[in-house]
Amino acid sequence: MASSSSRGVTTATKATTSFVSRFVARKGALACVVYVSEGRRVDVIDAIASVALKSDDDDDDDDGKRRCRRAHRRFGMAKPPTSPNDERRVRLVKKFVDEPYNRTGFTFAVRTDDFDDFDVEEKIEEADDRWRRRNHRSNNASTSSMISRLISDKVTEVAQSACTEIGSFQKHSATHPRVGIVDHVSVHPIGACEMEVATEAARAIGRRFGGELGLNSYMYGYATMENSLKNNGDKSTGMRELAEIRRKLGYFSANGAGETWIGASDVYDRMQKWEAKPDFGTGEKVDVEEKGVCCIGAVPFVVNYNVPMTCELSDESQEKLALDLGKQIAKRVSQRNEIDGLPNVQSMALMRTTPSTKTKEDGLSSSCSSTLRVEIEIACNLLDEISSTTREQVQKRIEALMPQLMVENAMNGAKLNGAACQIGKGYVTNLQPQDFLDAVSRPRSRR
Image 1 (cartoon, rainbow, N blue to C red):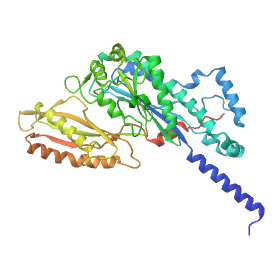
Image 2: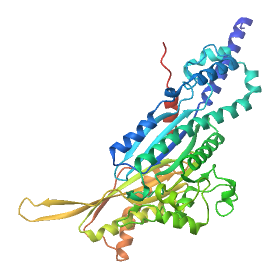
Image 3: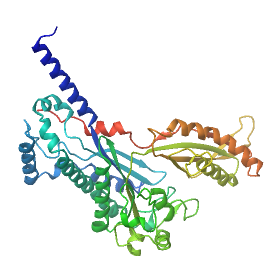
Image 4: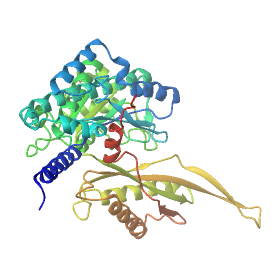
């Protein structure tokens, strides 16, 4: 039989283990992805990236230090942090420059849980469970407001730099759809972070875009504004979908030659036909044509999975047939296909590169033949990979559909005679949830 002292140790050990378990489960982060319409001018990208990389610590001031001391006294911490931003730092965790599509994605993250993992043991000894339970709600509210301010500060700075450096949106051209200089901002709760935090942050970004930068913004997902549901949106869920906004604004309809998107004059015209005013911003023509509009939302984490399709064509007349094949595949994969579409998958086909000519010489003769090589991508958004369609399922479906649709097209007279098409291995263009948690949990250097 164990002694009373050993039982006490056992009880303490169980309590400690329980606390650690709760701590691990509470680990969370807020992720935010910002897409800007520039991916080719290196000097412009570098200028925007310098703002994205700027550390919060660069702006520390006496007021920040006072807030730090107040937090120290309030929470009874043994060692006050040296900076209020050590724990809550907005980090640039990825910069993805997509030159062929002429766009760049900046991915940020900020921690939302209460404790540093390298200080767990010390915090366990000093934790007061009763105090924490009593102040849980008020602490969550203040933390949410702080996170919202931090992320909106950073994203607004990046957006302002993008508008300044990129210039007039009327001059922009790309083979990837877009509707603005800052085309899209998505905010995602990761781990233990609550959706309410993402919603508050997304709406804060929208308000600042419209009020400070003159960027007209449409909100979607959990950040949908109540007034927006009068003319559009799903009243049963109280949310508006990103795809619906894009469809109304012409995101899926190229307005230039050769499947390109140029300027934003058609975006303004579509806004008038839609009769849905931006949630933030003036909606004036001059602002839309110079800067375009931005879609901002709070949604569960989305996996961007692109599957490449390469076609060797015998002549230029087959280029459109190849792109049409890609569009057919994307349409069949999408959840909008009610017959056999994959649930929680949004997809579209894009011409990745301008067709290039290859010359093949015959070693036995001086004759030569030329082929055209085109690269098309089936770009997929996986809205819920955890409990729904996975990237592996998307890959297998696309690989099976390509030869099947080529046969069907040939039977209908759309023949890719002499063409050789193949599906490559898909790839993820964004980070995974654990990457965000790792990025915001890096321990500070000890002195």
